[in-house]
Image (cartoon, rainbow, N blue to C red; front, side):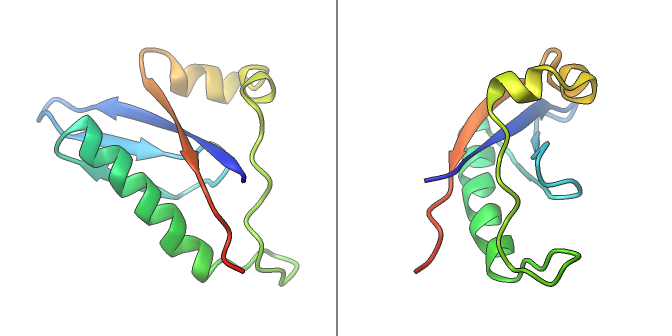
Length: 93
């Protein structure tokens, strides 16, 4: 089962914003940390149903490991001070 890492940041209004380093542009939020994680799971499942890559394939990109992401300066900046959560994704089929 693929595991996508989610970067979760608390905003000044108390809400939590979730983004996925391996799925640029995909984001969600929740009023609490638990709600944000639940929304992340739902959002990942929903987007996977309609995902289309540039080459026309419909499989989500393979998630990078924490070691691979840690070597990425953009991830290091995004993760600084954030909560990192593992979001399990069970592909349909």
